[in-house]
Amino acid sequence: MSQACYHLIGSCGIFCSACYSYQKGTCLGCGSENRNQQRISKWNCRIRNCCKQEKHLNYCFECKEFPCDKILKFVKSHPKDKKYTYRHQAIQNLADLKAMGISQWLLEQQQKYTCGDCGGQVIFYDDFCVDCKKKIDFGE
Image 1 (cartoon, rainbow, N blue to C red):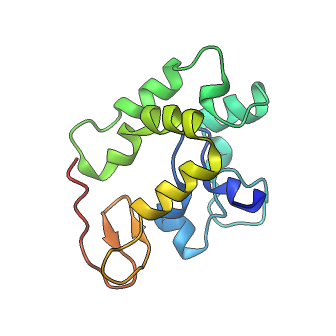
Image 2: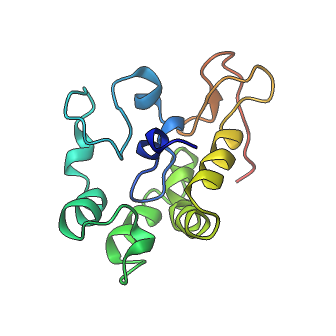
């Protein structure tokens, strides 16, 4: 896995490639520092700013305060809304990322968010393939 893929992982443990903004090309991934992108909300993300700007870390699991109130609030947001299941998985994602390493974790995420029918990209907000529009059920 090349260094170029590390921009696909948010400090919070989210796999950016499965985000609609990334797929549309309006965001270059949470790990990207390139300011020439349309999706600018990440510059105000409390978790990203805490890790990258305040503590000079890449991921929350690297912090001695993990899991802190910021990541817990993120994980607990929208508890009954399936659209936000990806958020509810952030702490487990971070634990897996730490345990298996970046390259292996990225491979597993790429497999998870690839359509089994057409090989297209699955979007985590709505659990659908951007190519064939098939609904994907992760059973969560």
